[in-house]
Length: 287
Image (cartoon, rainbow, N blue to C red; front, side, top):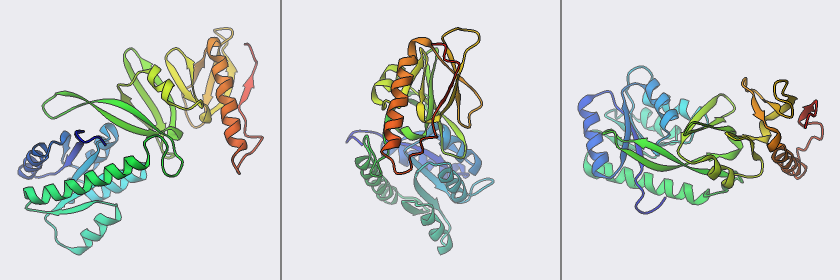
């Protein structure tokens, strides 16, 4: 995290006056509030859509609680930075907040001093997290850094950096001027809209992410089978594991597919779990 970088925040609070207070404190401390919600289900949906740096949530929300919403976010494979804001003093809630790895339990009435201390703790946590994983995480995961356009509450467009684990990327699509990344957390398929270009992403990802046609990149790890395209001789249809839609492998990109397959096989052979039968089936080679 750069020194002058502004963090993004999603606020979940069902009391209007408290919500306005949190917005004011957030803006005074140079946070970009990307949205506010009043229900637990909306908190989950908006976090997945916007992926802010920070969640500020009350425990008592409409529908499911803020704590339960954060649990559901974590089960989807996300690792949110959470500050819990509450008027409840029961130790049971304090224990539950730390079970979801919240960084701070901020008691109401929220003051500038309490807000500042909680935010400083969150910034230190995010800085440490990013130091451990700028391009390759501490556990060996490879993180892809992307640019994303966001809007604050006043509708101003801003750019920020987001990170996504390359292992989770299924494919990347350019449609007109919009780029979207389809990725999986093993339980579901998510979409991340970004401002990076296809060319930039092709450059910073590993050889296992290859260009299959002029508007798409695909992760070789999820390719199950290639079938000859009956409409366009020389092209192939790419079938992916656990994904209903198929992609096109154009004839001009077949060499990239072969390079990606070789890279994947080299990685698998280096792994103790290598299975020589776990290969991609290519039918009717019409190259």
